[in-house]
Image (cartoon, rainbow over all chains, first blue to last red; front, side):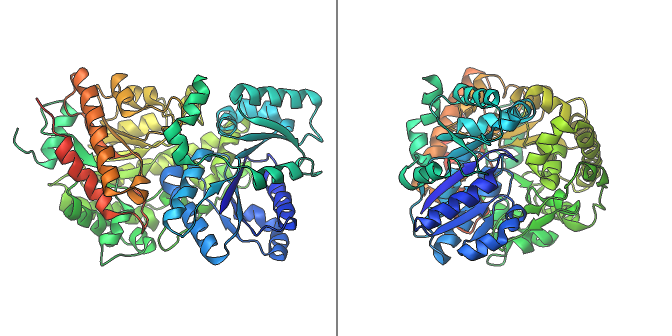
Length: 221
Length: 363
C-alpha cells in the first residue's frame, strides 16, 4: 500500500488539491482511500466521496509519537483489511511532522499483512499568503517544507509574480533538495504532475532514513 | 553497593547522591489496561477511576518500575471544556470536534467542575493508585499545560495562526485554561502524589520561537504561575515534553523542574540526544529522562530493545561521569509507550531488566 502525504498549513488549498488528485488517480484506475485531518472539512464533499466509493477516515492533531501514531496506523491497517486501497492520500494537520507520519504509517505493518511504500511527501505553500505565513507560523511552515520531497507553490493563478518568486526563494532556502513546482488547486494546474509523482516515485522509509541519517546529512551538506 | 528501594534510588538521583543504578520508567500508562481483568477497553479505563488506578497498580506488580505517573491522554481537559472526543475501543482518545469556530468563541470558555467528567476520573484515579503505590515508588499526577489544553480544544493550527492575528483572544482563553489548571493542581495536591508532571508540548522550536513561547506559555505568566503553584502545593514540579526541538533553556534552566522527560528524533538536526543533553548541562540540576523510541515497544524484538537500552545506559553513564553526575538520568521511553493492543509486554519488561543489569553505577 502506497501512502501519499499532501502537507501544508491550514488554508493552503490542501483539501481542494486532495479531491482533484484523488479524482484523477481514480480515472487512471487506482483504488483510492483518503485520510484527512478534519473529517468535518471533508464532509463538504461527501457526495464526491460517496460517488467514488472512497473511504475517509480522520486523523487527529497532536503528538505524533504517542497520540496520532496508534490511531493513524490502526486506520491504515483497517483500510487495508476492509478496502485494500492501492494508494492512500493523507492530508495531515499543519502541525504534524511528515517524518513522524511516515513512521506511524510503517508501524501499521505490525497490524496488517502489508508493506508500506511512501510516495514523495508533497507540501503545498500558499503563495497568496506567504507574508502572513512567514510572520505568523514561520516555524511550522519551515518544518513542512524542510521535510518535503516536492513543494508546490499553490494558488499561482491568483498570487502575484513577486509572491511566487518569494515563495520559491523561501523553499530553496529551507530545503535546497526539494523539487519545486507550481499548482493551482482551483484551476487544476499541477494536479496531473502531482498524480504522476504519486504514481511513479518512492520516498525513503523512516527506518532507512534513520539508518542513513538522511536529514542530518542534507543539512550538513 | 546494596540494592536500593525504588524511592531511595530516585531520591539519590534527584539529589545527586550515590545511587545503586539508573532509575527507569518506560512511560507505560494506558497500555497497562491490558493487565486489568484480562484486558479492558480504553473507554472503560479512561472513564472509571478504579480501573484507571488498577492499571498502574498491576503495571507496578508486573514490571517493578521506579515511578508511577498518571497519564491518561491529552484530551481530558478539552473534553470537559466541551470538545468532541473520539474514543475508539483500543486507541488513544483524541479531539475530533474542536469548539472554536470563530474568534469570539475564545471568550466563551468557562472552567468546568473538576469533580465531574474525566477531570474527576483522573483526580480520583490518581488518588487511588497513590494510596497503594506511594510508599513503594515515586508517584506523580499528569496534567496538560494551558497552551496544550487550548490547542486541543480549539484546534492547533487555528490557535497558532490566531496567536499572530488575534493574540488578545488567545490570551483570554489561556487565562481560563490556566484557571482550570489551577483548580486541577489543587485537586492533585489532595491525591497524595509526590509530584505533578506538566505536558508543555508546544515548547518546541519546530512550532514556536523563544519570544512566542514566552508570550503564550512562558515564565512570566501561565506556566510560570502554575509551576510555582505546583511547588507551593507540596508536589515536585516535573515536565514531560516529547517535542523534536524542545525549549530546554526555558523549560529546564528557567522553569527549574525536578524531573524533565524528553524524546529524541534522530532524523531532526538539532534534536538533542541523551548525551548532548547531559553534556550541555541540562542534567546538572534536573533529573532528565528519556529517550527510547516508543514505537520500539511495538515493532522491536526483546533483543533489539535490550540492546537499545544497554547502549543508552552506556551513553548516559559515560556522559554523567564526565560531569560528576552519578545516576542522574531516567531510562525511559521518549513518550508514552503506545497504549496499543499490539504493544509487546515483554519489551516493557526488557527495558526494566536491561536497566537493572546495565544501569548499575560504578562508584
